Amino acid sequence: EIVLTQSPGTLSLSPGERATLSCRASQSVSNSYLAWYQQKPGQAPRLLIYGVSSRATGIPDRFSGSGSGKDFTLTVSRLEPEDFAVYYCQHYGSSPLTFGGGTKVEIK
Amino acid sequence: EVQLLESGGGLVQPGGSLKLSCAASGLTFNTYTMSWVRQAPGKGLEWVSSISGFGGRTDYAASVMGRFTISRDNSKNTVYLQMNSLRGDDAAFYYCTVVGSGWFEGWFQNWGQGTLVTVSS
Image (cartoon, rainbow over all chains, first blue to last red):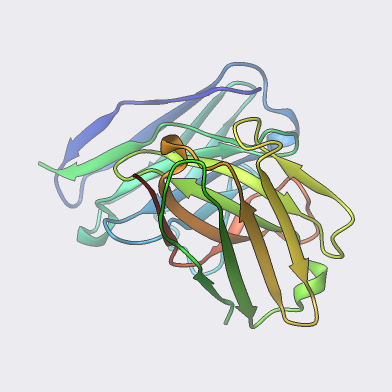
């Protein structure tokens, strides 16, 4: 089973700042099989990124993903008020599908 | 627009059973793998189970293997999750999801709003 560790647990930033979220895997993630989700309070998660760096339909280009092997990053170039939320990474391509523990991006 | 509507959640005693349903619309249902993902209140996400487009392949998390059964009825565009021998750690919001195009073990591209399962005596 691939264990995903996200850091930091909480990120305190101001609107307009850049957010950099980390996701580290316990073993190499093959073929860039990594996705990112955003979840706001009281809502279901929403797919942001799949295949490490491909944005899902309707996701603004201020969201970008990068990385390879064991280390992956989600970057929000300039935080908008609606971007303050919890973010999860997920590996796929082999069972069990697993998620990281999440990073909360809160308003400073 | 893809819509997923879960139902069937509620309060159940430990050891009891519950069957969740998810009605899908806005997609060619039998071409997609469907999955259930759960989230205990205030906790993270956990994949529970997946079923392929025509139901010939299923998979389960170790935590629910042997207790939960996933199935689908493509004539009704509906996926189900039969949950037996429920335990306290099964209490969670259960989300129905559509797996990314063409994949069995893929990303979760669409999510329902979730249905809450509470396990308590």
